[in-house]
Length: 285
Ligand code: GRG
Image (cartoon, rainbow, N blue to C red):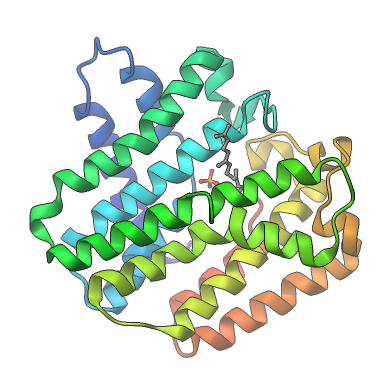
């Protein structure tokens, strides 16, 4: 594991543990499902990328961290809801029983909503340490990425696409939203907080977003369930349109390599970003 990644991941893990201890009293009905969800062992790619881009654009870590945590919270809520029977219906996530399996569907629905809401409450609590306009711009970026023209649109297109075979362009559009929006959010947040615009890094994020999803589809076919920490073979069983059903395994692998190569060109001399592109291509979980 790359040193920069593991150090930043550790900072995020520790902050999430701390936050989930302090947010509610232990007797509060949300204490346990909130802590269970936020401290489950995720890779924290979105949070780490937020810290990395903020560092590159000279945003102090004190300002970057709340957005890194909020983004990880939004990502975690989306997984809780995505795993529910009405959506992907999964029993395992991050190597643990899914939230609805552990606590029941009602609690999973509410804690998912609660985490999304809490991400905003938490950011607002920190507002005094930001320039007001940059703070609003960063809020705009993060909640637009999570919303009905971003991740949620992708999820809706995915759900609607279950009825028929999607075209390649439809699949690209779906994943640019569903997976891509939260992976592009880190550079947009860093841009908003620093007041600058980094087209190369934005392009990098778009390529790793697609690469991430192509790899996810490959892992659903070729992955090891124990390493992955979630069920495999579900896309195939549910007749979903994926990069594999549309391109076939070999062309999907070639498309993955193409996206990674394009990401590395956009990353330029940034060794960490080049490493992360490789990590996404090689990940087994
Ligand atoms: C409101 C009912 C309801 C559902 C919303 C928003 C949503 C459901 C789902 C979000 C879409 C989603 C789950 C996209 C998949 C993206 C993806 C490949 C997630 C896995 O990300 P990793 O591998 O996960 O980074 P870890 O566990 O490492 O954080």
